[in-house]
Length: 185
Image (cartoon, rainbow, N blue to C red):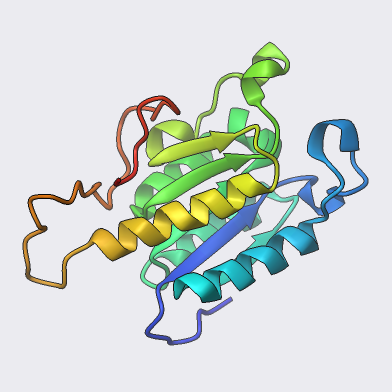
């Protein structure tokens, strides 16, 4: 899937296994909003923010890795809800680290209020931050955070303004805590 050439920053939103069942899958945990509704809302909000949003869902780990790699050189950032692969996929983690795009991990449910095996994310250390437990609004917040990051970047060859806290485009080695925040003010 090649990105259209555009002057707008491109954000690729990746949805992992079973997220195609949103709206009907365990609505007491994941809500009744469908994946199509989430994607449509992100594209609309992206236009408002001056971003081109591309979405991709797969139940296959390799397809998600391929899409992360395709984003390199085409996208400005990633939003990823890897579903169950969050806790198991070293390969997906390595792909995110390798492309070195600003990435935000999103989860509809609060992972820390669920089973213990869900408490650890292999992806969080290579993402700017993690948003969990806010339902579909978490995706919107991730998109808005990336838009702020892109807006805070100085034009090519210019130093950032001293009053702007600029996060590195490369993933941080530490997990961002929701209390500390990992994105510019």
